[in-house]
Structures are given as structure tokens and as C-alpha cells.
Image 1 (tube, one colour):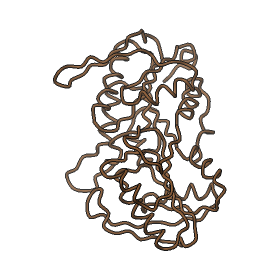
Image 2 (cartoon, rainbow, N blue to C red):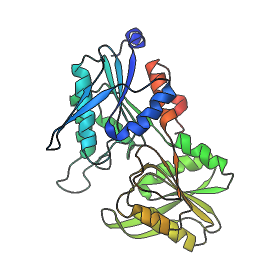
Image 3 (tube, rainbow, N blue to C red):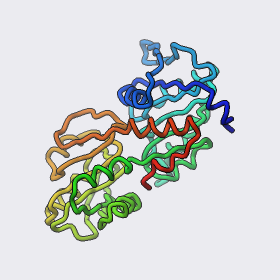
Length: 316
């Protein structure tokens, strides 16, 4: 267990992997400090070795790194955790705004992997003492870890934005699995909710989609934890507009946005796509609005460091 008095006396340092430097800098600035110095030795075959260029002995080390593809990002995080432990860091906290492989949270077909569990085991084996993340694909993934997990929700940022629009909104779940999340948004906004029903032909390909509920003359908001190829939400938005909706917005915490996503969004009926900066945008669209999670993570880190409650940071 963490010794409370020792933790208060231990200095805190922030570091980042290469892919999340843009976000780590904002988190450190919001916290009131600067990022620590690191370097990465790269070999000609693609192998790399991260190292700390300053002492971390006796420190509480926060490493910011989302683990979106390529999987080098996950490997870099693991190596940085290992390096910190071997350099006698007091505690190592992995701040993973987007946890990759989280969609592999169960065996949904024979002889397949459970990637989320494997990632949890790898992080534990590397020596991590605590995890901070946001909007896991499934809440129960927290149970894969044998260390404390601070699971934050982008709803604490998105709901105030929706309220600022001043519209009578209807919340939509993109599928049956997202009904819990959509219901939470609807509850806090005192809004109605509808559910989209989709049938996939294969991964990332939706065969058909229907909506359960009334959408005519409504301002719709589809909420999800991530948006990948954008096929589902674009199809749902076009269908809703075809059934008489006034407008369709999409909220998605993690902007994976792979393949033809940007083209689909630009050509769809979506009025606005609101995302966070857990993953950097790889393209551009006038329809995309980014809300930063930096202040939220900095606040939670400060409270965890000072052993304060973080309950006030949760909308649901």
C-alpha cells in the first residue's frame, strides 16, 4: 500500500512518450510544471530504447502515453515504466488517455485473443503502480488490472458543451452496447433517448441500421466512446436526417478516425463531430471540434497526488 506521508513528500515528475507529447505538455502546464527530459535511442532496424535524462530516484513518475496504433506506442510505454522502476522511482503511474486493444475485452468468437487483458498483464509485469485512463470500451476492463485504475469520463467535458448549445436535444446510442452511456447523457440533460440497431457483415462494415424511437423534428446527438472508420455514425446520421431529424451531432471521446473516416464525415449529414484530444487528429475536417482533456487529467493527478477524493470529476 502507498504510504500517505511518504507520498506527500515524494517529488512528482511528468514524462511522455513520443506520440502523446502534444497532450502531455498541456497536462503538465495545467498542473503547473514542465515535462521531464527523456531521449530515445533508435536502431536502424526500428528497435528503440527510451531513457530518462534526469534523476527519478524517489519520485512519483507520471508517464503520459496513449496506446493507439502502431503498437510501438504501447511498447514505448512499457519500456518507460521499466526504465523508471530500474532507476528507483518511488511510484510509476501510467496516464493512458486512450487504451488501445480495449475492444478485445472478451472472446466473441472461437480461438481469439483477449487483448485488453494481455495489455493489463503487460503493464503490471513492467511494474506500473497505478493506471489513469478515459472512457474504456467496457467498464469491466478495470477488473483486468491488479493495480488501482482511475477511469475518467469525457462526459464531464461533453455535457457542459451540450448544455451551452441551448437546444432541446435527443440522445442516441449507436448500438445496443452503447445504451448505458447514452442513458447517462440523457439523464443528466433531462433528454429523451433513442437506440440504433446495427447488423455487421464483418468488422468495421455495417450491413444495415435502424433506429428505435422518434427522431422527426429533433436535434439528435449520437454518443460513443470512439469513432473509427465512421461508417456506423455516418450511416445513422443520414438515416436520421432521412426520417426528418433537424440536425445530427456526434460525440466520440477517442478520434481513431482510420481509413475513409474523414471523407465519410465530410460527405455525411453530420452537423458536428465533437471529440477529445486523447488521440491526435491525423486529418482535417471543418465539422470536427476538439475539446481538450488536459485540465481534467491535471486536476485528477493533483488530487491523487494529494490523496484527495476525485468523485467530483465524475458525471457518471
